[in-house]
Image (cartoon, rainbow, N blue to C red; front, side):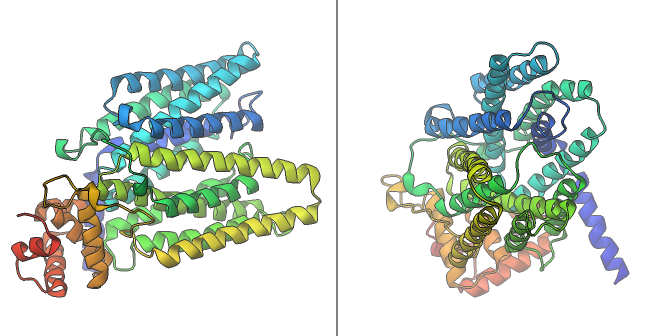
Length: 470
């Protein structure tokens, strides 16, 4: 038993050692986000400034979604790459200049808007990277990237303003460079392609709605200029480590449902604990809040990336819509908080707070009662017109939905469905092994069960059931 335990963890750490370091670049931009507003190191930066910054991210994300047919994929568009670097570093430099050299509201606003626009582009470039990956890899890479970012933020708490100012200019360039390096690990056939047209039916409105409701609630309950405390960091570190090792362990107890099943109570408890009348301590409230929101944001990233991966929908378009709505809803939450603090009594504010928390609970229950699996359609409504004229083979999107329907009909487990998705993409045993972080013997066992449940005896018969050519 001990030998089996040691062998399992030896395999886990060997897989960790084989992972490219570049994917940690997500943590760099997350750490950069915290520099100006969460350490009280930059004089003159307040709540209104952060609202302007986040508004720029939201508006630019929606603008990118509208223009996705012309400018995506972003990661390979040299003009976009250069503009992103200029906006983020130039905007950071302007903010540093205004805070420490010459006070100027106009220059500060220009810097914040430029930095926000640049970050909007950078975030969507990273979503393009995630959209090329199997969802298990998305979970591992994204969790590790967030964990890395939280460690950096923790280190920032002991740095003087001059060092933070330097990092504010350097970190965006590092994250951008690491994003480009990450893309070099992707086979050419899997790289993001140019978006041909916009299909409104391809919008997964259910996860977008859930994220919007939850972000509105967190915007009302937590102000962006509140200083970071240990609870914020510890909560995020714990849940990202849980997801990271949960995926790599290949244990039966862990699946993607586990993530949102934990996100739901943690979000609810966190939102309740930050209510003034129920607060039992800032550390506990911050830990639960950050843990729940991080779990939810990871799950939403996995869902949207998986939709891009399965259906071939542009990640910049899809995530541009989600991010734009998310940031604008957060600002709406702040506005409601400001109005409530000005015109409502404490009792009325508490009632409003509990009502918003109840709305989060209702959103979770309604959405996850109808969409219980990662591979669900999540509100997408692709039509047969998505199939190329004169082509009898399913398009990637329709094929993915065919696999999802068959899996539900024949009671495939989530891991068996993931194997079937990869088989439908005609990946080899070795490729499936790498994508799912399991041994070939495990893959063969999954395939054997898939054949038995679908009533087929060969790959040829399986392709016949799926409706694809060999």
